Structures are given as structure tokens and as C-alpha cells.
Length: 231
View 1 (tube, rainbow, N blue to C red):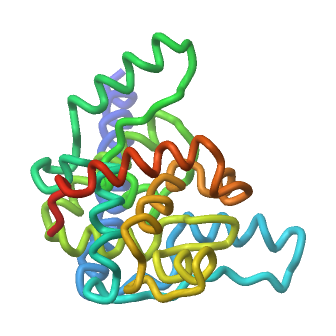
View 2 (cartoon, rainbow, N blue to C red):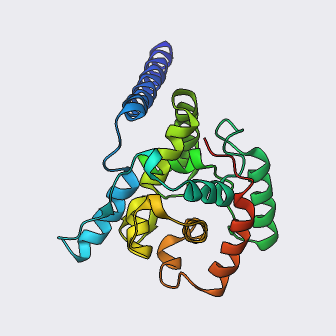
View 3 (tube, rainbow, N blue to C red):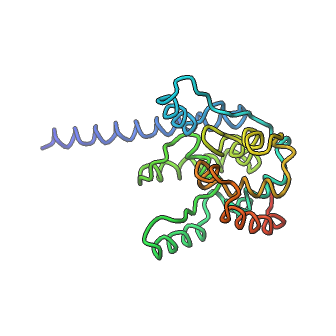
């Protein structure tokens, strides 16, 4: 019995060490990307692998632009659409999550999410789209790392440069070129609002970016943009 207890303690200690090492790996990348721009995120890798199953030569469209070369209108639009408490929260919008849970309960299925920009970035940088408890827990840990080590400006900069905006389209510059044939710096308020509306399901909305739903949501976001606080 003593031998069994000894092995159980050793096993538990080994597990704890492995978990800490794994979290240290994430932490190392978070520290590095505070100063260096990510070239390829985990979410990009997943999309690229799937695309290359059909066409081995396909490449993603992704062009990094520094924060100051991304339209202020797009920054306002994305915050208004995705995370209106971005400046104030510390990574989690508890009220927003509660509202999303209540809405999903009423509908009987998942129709709304309460993830902040910081949480979405944590997932895009490191994780998979799988909606498992483990992934959500790991997302929360990485979100805390990002909020602790990065400022809001850096979080928004990396998010705008890495978020998916269509099939093989990643980042604000590629999106602006794909939909409007202009640099991200030149996006108007209406164009920015329309791009922000696409974010929850960009590959679906890109098929009809001027649908009645997108048009209606664009007008709503345009009305909210003046109140959005941008870092």
C-alpha cells in the first residue's frame, strides 16, 4: 500500500511538472510576441492544412500592418461589434458571458458567444476551434497571460492582423484588399462596420457581404462606433 501511495504521489508530481512546462511554453511565446509580430497562428495553420488537402499549392492571404497603418474606423468598428468593454475589462466580460448563456438557453442551442477580443486572440494564436472544456480552460489561462504582459494596444494590433476574414483571408490588410481593393489604412466607417459584422462567421458572410442581415447589422455597428474606446 505504501508503495502504491508513493507511485501515486510521483505520478501526480510528474503531471504537475508537465502541466507547468506546457504553460511555460505558452508563456514563452506570449512574451516573444509582445515584441515580435506573429507570422503564422495556430488557427491559420489549421485552415491552411485543410485547404491544402484540396490544393497543395494554396497560400493564405495575410499581410501584417502596424497598428498606426490600420484605419481608426476599423478599430472602432471591431470593438463596437465584438467587445465594447475592451478597454475596461481584464480579459473577460462576465456580464456579456451571462447574457450569451441566457440567450443560448432560450434558443436551445449555441447562437451567441461572450468571448472578448483577448479570448478570441488567445484561441487564434494557440488553440483549435473545438468547443471543449479543456480548450476553454486553456484559453482562459492564455488570456490572463496576454492581459498581464501586453497592453490593450498590442492585443488589438495582433488581433486585427491575425483574425480570419474569409476563406484564406487573415488580417485587416488582406481583408481590405479582398473586399474593397484598398489598404487597411483607407477603410471608411461603412466599410469598417461591414467587415466587423463579418467576424463571427466570415466564410459564410463573404458569400453575400451585402445580404439584408449584414446590411442591417452594419447600420447598427455604425451607430455604436462613436462610443467605442480605442487604445
